[in-house]
Amino acid sequence: MLTADHLAIRESVRAFVKAEVEPIAHKLDNEGAEIPKELVQKMAELGYFGLIFSPDYGGSGLDALSMTVVTEELSRAWLSVGSVMTRMLITGTLIEANGTEEQKRTWLPRLCSGEVLAAAAFTEPEAGSDAAAVRTRAEKNGDKYLVTGEKAWCTFANRAHVLCTLVRTDPSQPKHKGLSILLVPKPADGFAPPRLSGDPIPTIGYKGMNSYNVAFDGYEVPADNLLGLQEGKGFYQLMATYEYARIQTAARAVGVAQAALDAAIAYAKEREQFGKPIAQFQAIRHKLAKAQTEIEAARQLTYYACRMKDSGKRCDLEAGMAKAFAAEMAEHVTSECLQVFGGYGYSREYPAQRYWRDARVFRIFEGTSEIQYEVIARRILDDRGE
Ligand SMILES: Cc1cc2nc3c(=O)[nH]c(=O)nc-3n(C[C@H](O)[C@H](O)[C@H](O)COP(=O)(O)OP(=O)(O)OC[C@H]3O[C@@H](n4cnc5c(N)ncnc54)[C@H](O)[C@@H]3O)c2cc1C
Image 1: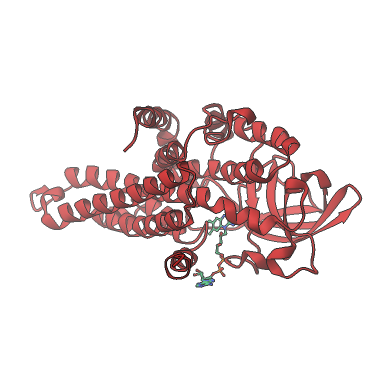
Image 2: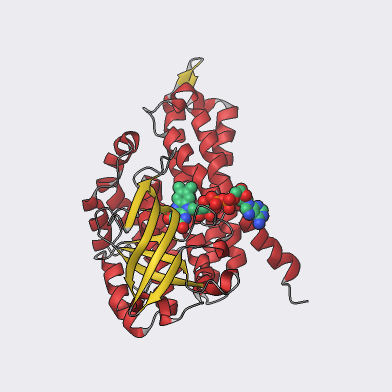
């Protein structure tokens, strides 16, 4: 159950997206355009980037459920709008949990206020699900690290001021043991060639933000930007942030699916065939009813993971289940909702195709479905403590 506070937050986000996002999302998506900078700035001013962080560091100190409610409503308007905050969430969570006091004071207030925008550079061309296979090398040279290597799929890299980057600081250590997280500053507009360059990857959906292949060639980073000032901890630091990230991704999937259903319901009431609205045909009515049921199941599973997180309990199982279930639900529901539109569902004139294209990514990023089920299987089969 949402409290009165959660409901008030939901209403305020709904008012924001109605005024600022809904009027532009469809057009910008069709043009393949990026989210306007002013919109990102407004989200920052509304505190969306600092929701869960401590007020001591500029955050609002809210619970995971509040973050989920905000995410769902933003994503319902446009997936990329609900996804900008993901980058500050991941980077801020890593810093709040693992940073030195000075790093927390340096980075968190600016991440919360939007003065510093972040992107996550973990994946590499040869290291996706197997994050411990990361090769990008950060070599200590006096008070600097020199970073060399390639990252893939770094979303929002062009607009970020800092790349939260998983690097190999000790190549002599096996796989996950030699990794660290480095906060890599960069120009806010574009890259810094030839030492740091980026190429956008053309995608079928998730417009509004571009994902980049990023190449480092001896790019200098202050040694003070090593998270926690400790080498060799990066892999473990990253794994510990996955709970929040997966909960937030489940909420994004619920938001996109709900948007698809809202549009399908409106269309089904208005579109007439055989002399009556198609909403009167049982096949369509049941499709819509089933979609609502599946969305609500995913939403409640996400809320459940939030409650576990908010009570301070380990929730990788619950977050993994919510993410995996919501991702598959969103793919199925958006496809069924597109079907309600018939031929018009396949047209760029209607947003049904946007929800469907956007929903396809949920099974892939923030840990693929196959990896989520492996996490879940490990917990239920191997870690029962019996
Ligand atoms: C639009 C988009 C945005 C992204 N944004 C970011 C970002 O901002 N930052 C970032 O760091 N990354 C980002 N990613 C990368 C994303 O996290 C990876 O794509 C994902 O982790 C999968 O890695 P991969 O693509 O290399 O696939 P692979 O790991 O090569 O997997 C290929 C297939 O094999 C399966 N598989 C792999 N290992 C196993 C296993 N052990 N058991 C069973 N099946 C397995 C996978 O599930 C998948 O089906 C983004 C990806 C996309 C598509």
